[in-house]
Length: 169
Image 1 (cartoon, rainbow, N blue to C red):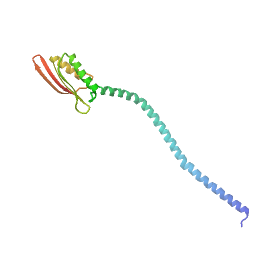
Image 2: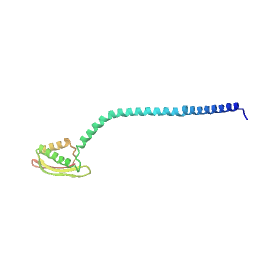
Image 3: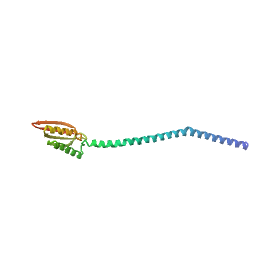
Image 4: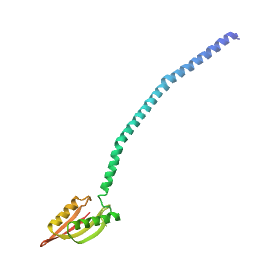
């Protein structure tokens, strides 16, 4: 049997060595695992904050432009007559009728708008009047606030009167 003093010294040495080993493992984990990962974490957090600030600044610049673009898109959409929109179809007929009257042309016929291709409205009209008035009407159609494509145009001359037929989108 060993003397008690020897056992105590060996036990104490074992406990000290175990503590030293645990301290070494702890130090390894802290300095070689946790600190590098925490540094990466803080770098990522800094990148996220920087990106958020850049995004806020970008939104501050883009949002007014986006709102202006939305207003422009609405204005542009109002230039086109959309099929199956009764209000727009009536507006198209009234618009053409107004131009005919403004240019002192006689309206022979105007057919109500009818759906052609997807999203397009077509109208046919026949007017008669002087050459100058007919040309003035065409210029007005060309320069008005609505986008109108003339698919077919026929002009017949009878003495001083001209009859014009238009098929338009």
